Structures are given as C-alpha cells and as structure tokens.
View 1 (tube, one colour):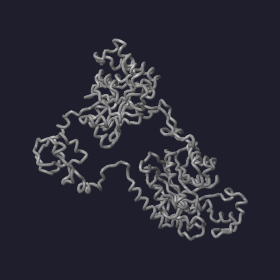
View 2 (view 1 turned 90 degrees about the vertical axis):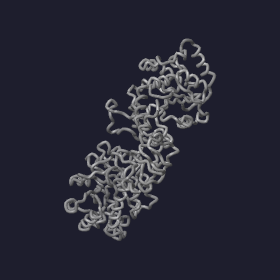
View 3 (view 1 turned 60 degrees about the horizontal axis):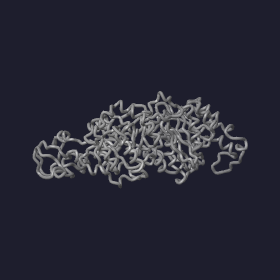
View 4 (view 1 turned 60 degrees about the vertical axis):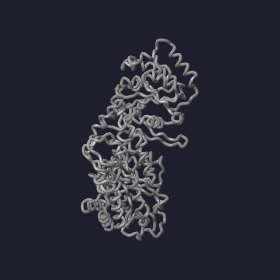
Length: 632
C-alpha cells in the first residue's frame, strides 16, 4: 500500500504540505533534552536544521496545572533528576513563555526551520496557539483525553497525534473527534517505551491506520535505538516521522538513551531521501536507465532464412533472439503473423519498424465471437437457461440481442447439455459441446473460456454474455466490440452506476468496527448530487484471446467499461423463480425497444403451438433437474 499514493494531504506549516505525494516530514524532537539551558536549545535547533530536519519540536507544560500536589511533592532521588522532588525536576526543565517566544523566533528567523511543540495542558495549548505554532503535537499520554483533543481540534490548527499506550478503538474515537472540525491531522504509530525493542515497535499498525483511516496522513514516532526501524516505517508509508534527538547520549535525562545524536539524524535524513527516491511510482514502464541494457540484452523478432519482399510472415519463419539492432519486441510476435515484408531480409536479420506491412494483417478477418456459457442445472431454478420467458426460452433473448448488435462473426453457446445446444441452434447460435470437466459446480467462467478457445483457435476476441441477463443492450454490445476491434482496449465490461454507500465487512464474531469505503461520513453527499460508483452489471465481458492467454485474466491490460444509462430497475440477473416474474415484465419493454421479436427465426416455430413450450418445460421439470449450477 505504501507504493500506491493516495490523494491525502494537508498543509502542516505555511508552504509545507504533508501527505502521500510529498516527502516525509521529519521532526527532530528536542523535547527536554536541552537540559533546561536556552543556549543548548538554540545549538540543538541549529544542528538539527543542518542535519536536514524539517521541524524542531519542544514540550510545553504548565507544571502546576499538569500535575497534582502529591505528584509534584514526590521525592525524585534518581540519577536523572534535576531536583529533590519531581516538581522541582519538571520546573527546572520547563522554559518560560518568554523563552519559548525567543526560541521560536530564533528557529524561524535565524535558522530557517519550522518550530513547534507538544502542549500537555489547556493553558499550554492556549499559549502555543497565541504564538502561532503551525501545528499542535498531541503526546501519547493525552490521546485518550477526548475533551482535550476536542479543545485543540476546535482551534482548526493542524495536529500530529501520537498513539502510544492506546488501542484501535481509542484511535477511532480520536479520529472521529477531530474529523468533526477538520481533517488537517496525522496519526502516528508509537510505542511508549524508552528505548523500545524491535519486537514491540509493531510497524504493521501503519498499514492498519492507512486502511482504517484512508483519508488522513499516517506517520511514525520512534523511540528505538538506531535508524533501521524508522527507515522501515517510511518504506511502509509513514509521511511524518518524529525522532528524539540529543547532543550527547550520556547526558542526564531519561530520553537521551532513546535519542539520535546529530550525526545519526543526518544519516537518517539522507537515507530517507534515498529511500523515497527509490520508491518511485506504481506504474511499470521502461525507465531511461534501462534503455542501454535493453539494447544490449533485450530480445527482438528476427527472420529465419532469407526472405524476399512480399513474402508473408508466419510462426515458422520468425524467431525471438538477442538481436542487433533491436526491432519488434517478443510480445509483437503474434501481431506480425500475416504481415507482408516490404523489403528483402537476410537470414537472422532483425525485423524493424517499417519492414512489415501490418495493414495486410489488419485487413485479414479478426474473428469476433459472442460466447454464452450455459450449463445444465441451476441451484435456484433447474434448467433456467431454457425456461420460458415471454414466449421464448431464456437463452434466446441473449442470442437475439447479439443478432441485433450485428457486430459478431459468430454467436456460440457452450454447454454440456445437448438440448440447450439444440434449442440455441434454432435461434441462430452455434453449439459448442462443452467439456464436462469445465462445467462442474466448482468450475469457473475462465475455465469455460479457455476450453472454448482451445477448440476455436481462429477466434481473435470473445464477448462472454450472461445468459441469465435477458435484457442485454445491443447498443452497448456494439460499442464494446468497436473499442476492442479498433485496438483501444484489451478488455471491456458492462457496467452500471451504483449509488450505494459502501462499508467494510467485519467479522461479527470478533466484534470489529467497520469503516466507509467510498465516501466521507463527515462530508456525506446527497445522493442526487453524487455521481456514484461504477459497478459491474454482469451482463457481458469482452476480451482479446491473446490477453487472456498471456495474462491469465480476462480483465487485465487496458481495461474499460461501457455504462448502461438505463435504470437498474430495468434489468434483472435471474437466479430465482421470483426473478422470472420480474423479468417477464421487463423483457416485453426491452424486446419492443430493440425489436427483438422480429429476429426470431421462422424455423423456430414459436409460439405457434404449445408443443414447444410444453417440451421445454417438461425438459426443465424432468430432464435436467437436480444438477447443481453455481455459475453459467
């Protein structure tokens, strides 16, 4: 997921955006590692900037408001202490408001680095807001305090929220609390241990945050030693990275041991920028750096034997080799078959662009076939493929729609049932006797496609139409065929608009919470103002044979859809007896619109008598009942 950028970003400081399409925002957390000395703090600001940090961050508390009396009075006789009591220790390390203003001015005006701070209490937040801190950093201990989170969110200042010591339910509450006011915030995976061991880091939460909160920026706040884990976080998609820094790891203070020294910080920033450059784009294409190697190692199509101008290329007089110079790549081998040479070529010579008249190939017939897969039985309605619908067998309506589209060289019905095949032939389709091994309850449509193609190698492209979708639109079918034949697309499918707000499925026995998949609950659109999603209608799938054979998928390569503008209420995919009742009304309107009844062959002799209807229904009731069918 880290390699698939999302359109998620916000401005964390004037002129600096963070998000999946921006460099990782690196925060050097000085915290209270300044030893209570403003001069040391300034030195750390300057060196952190020189190391490449985007931001320096401190911690601001109103000590007497943040801690109760007993906490402040607690003896604090430890090596890290700056006072006899915990209160004295905290007060020693706390800068005054005047000192914070001085440090902010120094960072922004003299050093040129973003200055921010974590606020640990309400008064601290008010002060930080007063001096125009660009973003609030919410420390892990305060994440569960939703009133405090809301207090900050109401100020509409960007927020960076750590998540140490929390669980996913708490983070969902935090997310929803802030979202009520704005979406300018990032959630950082964090483990509150100093230093944290690798097995407690749990970087996988970064991915979980991206999935559960797809519309916000995700990051990492690390307390580990070294830089390896932070690099891993960036590789997984962390776009905000916070690390504690120090000038000397041996100094007094509990955070120094889990901090990076400034040389480590500089190395981390350098490695992050190299890593980001290496991630690149999810698009796969020939890169400039590969062109020389491709000329050296890439393979091309060559001729076998001396060939004269006007000769026709075929599988036996071409081969694929490492060639000099480079010519047609291997994937064009089959496209060259049938092409006519425009010049003489010597044995083993590369076929170059311009050497072949491919128009000859284009003029040759590209056979396009309609294919209707129809098995014997049905779980819902036995024999439904030939059950009567408005006076005709169900399968007939799809055949007639193909006839009306007038864009197929052949219309085929592939079935393991002779009676279905014979009835289909009465309506003008050809009957392919389907291998029973590809017509089992567990069989897939792709198995049916491949079995059919194996027996009909002359077919260039296939349009698979769903027999149980009787209101096939001939206009859409014709449009899809055109897109394929003109070489614009490798695969085209029928689609409809969907105006359903979708939510992620959760396992009920685990009591999980769901999340929206295609809308923002805080900016929920009115249905009438929403263009909706595009969903497969299931009516048909069109693909080239070569695409299916080379990729193993009938929906790969250059995929497109044709959108049915008709209301979904005008269509039905028949699966139950009740669907037949609905379809009976729809097919009358549909047949009249496209004049399908005019295409019924006279030889079918329908519905001159009830004999044909009786024969089919008798077949449905007795001939193939009990045969399960999970798909076409």
